[in-house]
Length: 361
Image 1: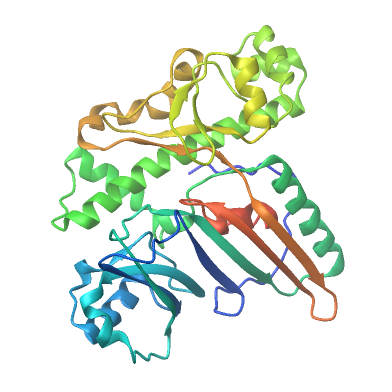
Image 2 (image 1 turned 180 degrees about the vertical axis):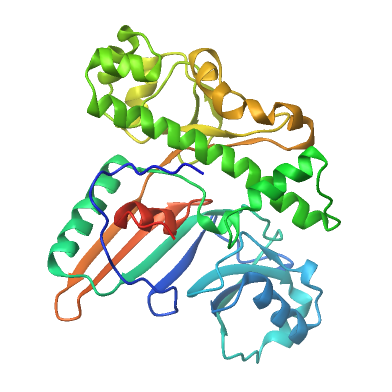
């Protein structure tokens, strides 16, 4: 896979370990819980467990089946995370004295509905980097300021592609009929990895456009990209590195609906104000596709998926996302760089970290 960075500084060497002291994730719920209803909502802190492992332990204690539990999203195993899970309140009494070395029930309330996947606004992260010298700390601070102002490319992280980075190949082979996968969940996961691979390639190309515009004059950029000189001049008028094209599928940020970009000047301004963003395609049937000039760009990336569209559920994903509530500090005596920031659901903190350090896992 081709993977480009937005920022252009040299790599920054740091030590990052995903443990409960240096990596903390706090889920931000989509809505306030009503405080009444038939569903018990637990605010749970877990350490070094997957969400599935946590649910399994809760299930074993209270007697509810794992499928009876609701959760908004799957959290990493490594590090410390807090999230909300729901179960019918008839199981509440059996959880009163729940104790586990790696799980703590922080609080409880009630709600009228079961928590469903996707019912979260986003996540707030704490990351501590170690072995950071003073100069590197300044570079990290400057880079984080830029990402706070400009946003960042919302790539799928390495977690999506497996230890060897080839899950997308397995997904493509399944779609081609060259590979059988009996377990439906694994089949869908491999196919989603293939969709993610195409999305990441699309996003890398959009970054490449920005870098070519920054590094070449009008004629050189037009030749390199195959665009007209008039198009190059028009793109240069946009302030942001990530450019908006006619026919792009934009999306109200962070919530709302997708729509086709028709009025370039209007949508560029809204994008610069972080009211909207541009989305990329996870190919499949019944999902909105780009139009016009943007569609011509997309063809080169997505053409290989055309024979498989009927086998995939398509959707859109933010191509560019924005950090919120950013805080950071450098601790000189420890050579630590600590940061807090919030991301919308589906965005990876590790992708932000890779953009900051220019080190891919």
